[in-house]
Image (cartoon, rainbow, N blue to C red; front, top):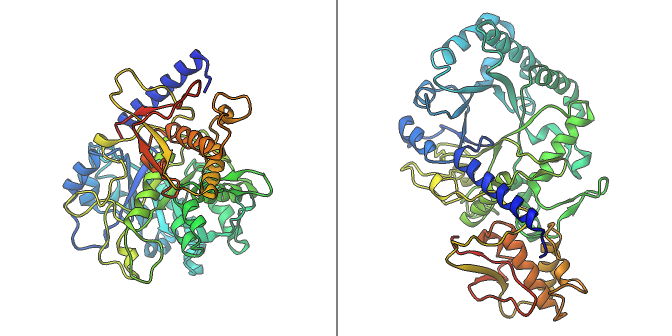
Length: 463
């Protein structure tokens, strides 16, 4: 693909810069640390584990002092939470809020980097009208208690919502809050806006797939190759469910005048196992979702309605919670095991991180010892090749070399054009093997498929 030398240099610089940034800090990647379990490792061991990863933030559902203390002087941001049952007292008694701050914040801060206090969890969809009505006053009293000890600027106050607060989320541009919540939501968002605190929400493509188990929906949810879904209002083609859900939230905020309130993904994940009658949980799916989500965040691509930045995202979850009720999947979201080993590898370890994805492939460095190309497997049907071609060229790569007059147009066959596009997509996706799958119709090869004037970009074999 023809790229001006200056552009190549720029892309190399950007790629290098992003790689350095990843090695140093990925403040947009967090994790949920649930404790509904009887087999969790000591907090001190967990703190060491977290320091060996690119995880920069931890969300607690409560305010366990042992965990908060263990995270002291690690630089890891800590989100703590009040119980839903504390909301009435927090709302009605300012002294209760002051005591809560005195007990759960002041003994640890600033050595323990508390950055956010969530007042309750999914209160708006709890069905408890009393809690819903008292949520905003509780948040205000917690904020006032922080202000009284001069911490109002450093520690934010918010609450966490489920996607159930939306009445409509498809297409993303039509995202709207449920009218029955809207008045209360306006009050909460007014608080978020005035205090520069985030709107925290829990999007789960996993649950979207459970309600629509078609193979194309699974690919859409797992950030894998798919035909995409076009928003009829904006004509934007969405290529994954995560972006669609987050943009639906943005549209809902925008619809009531709060588009400038920051969105934070407080929970998202995929279970790696479940009961026999559960559709969706598997190690393969969990690794694909979490791994591709992390790669998406690292790319800094953003979403179609919020491009060029990554939404702060807290993965669910650090460990399994073996005492949780419900189906088996509820106890199988952990990224790490109680013995501190990985349940499966999604590239969070500092020793195995994947750099951010450049939009255009660059030539391999002179030190690359082995080049790899993504090519179709033998016997792949024309229908699959066409789908691969359409998908790859629909993701923003430069397919002009296989258009009439291009260096790789001849031979003018579907197999040749698909092979070029599939490889280009793989190279442009940072040579991640997950992006040379194409519904199991592709494979990596060390044999250079270039011919005559047609050059297939290549990458090192460090994957």
